[in-house]
Length: 229
Image (cartoon, rainbow, N blue to C red; front, side, top):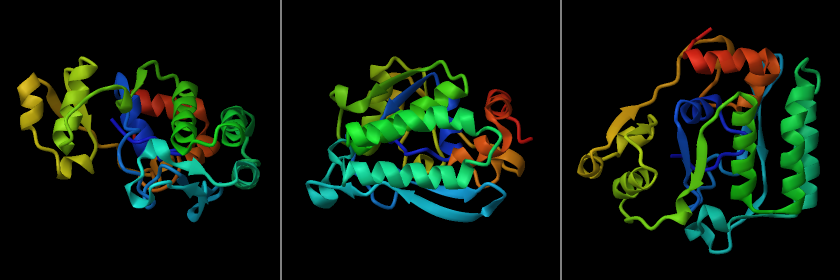
């Protein structure tokens, strides 16, 4: 379970890739300092050189707005800016044509739809498809669940008939196991491999850098094998 992220980090994508089902948390509070509307791009030849790519987003109810309520400010300008920055960073990659096939539908959606959550979710779905993931995707807003943080996650896991909830390092800090025990659902903590190579900056920069640098076949192999190479 994870919020929709815009061209997500490799650590996030790896967690989703390891699961059979991604429950998109689209009805939780939008957080401006998170990754629902932005991605940190790394320069192709120097992953230490970084720049934020942000979708200017309007929250109709201020800080209390849900992710599903967020809307892009001036979609036409946002589309142009996103396209220019991505080409500037990764257009020289030998894998650019493959990346462009993922980026173009997202750019079209920015201009045509304007819902931040849908754009972010779509960017992640297309990357998962590119890397050969065959799981299913559902949205939390389609289910009626309890409001407690751990209770909500346990209820969602039960709704999709999960036997195990895959928990990231952030969630492990607050998660209460009792609601999962009620359903007989196990909890497994996911930790992405640490190391260099494609995993450089995996918790900080968009997976687009690893794809542009190493290519989708190499990255898919790492995700399947859990390798640090």
